[in-house]
Length: 235
Image (cartoon, rainbow, N blue to C red; front, side, top):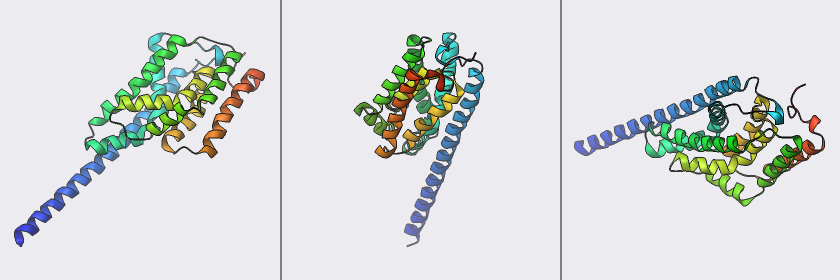
């Protein structure tokens, strides 16, 4: 009987060691993810200082904008992506899977930033309002709902996760780009629903009013642009 008992004890010790290692890896991954997000907020705010001109904002050089954009995406997206990072660590059992997962995830958003740089031009309030209305309507679409569900599910790669999260959050990001892409205040405002939609399940009681509020904001921008804070350049 001694030998089976010894084997059982060894198995228990191994299991405890594995559980302890997994817990430590999970805690380290969460700390690293949220720490990077916090640092990115600091970097983004410093980079955006003095750049906000509402709908007349200019993006600067390509390298500058991409650096700002990646900082913004890391700040706004990583808190909501933390559960996916933890699922990845839990599935692989290795902390070293985090950098590649987060890196490929942010690479997808960097590509979105390249598209923004190519398409963006300083614009008027009417154009901003029309874009915001379109973004609000997008919140009702099946593409949005499907992308949001997938964004909250486990993904095998950061790239795949990033694609679904772009589909989920692109409408909200379009609002930021339309009203003032370099506004720290609008960045904070948009970050709230972006993070909430990644962490919380879809509920019509919350999602429908949010979409209607975005459409309403677009209409207000068209009708009374001066009433929307930060929309027009300071005199």
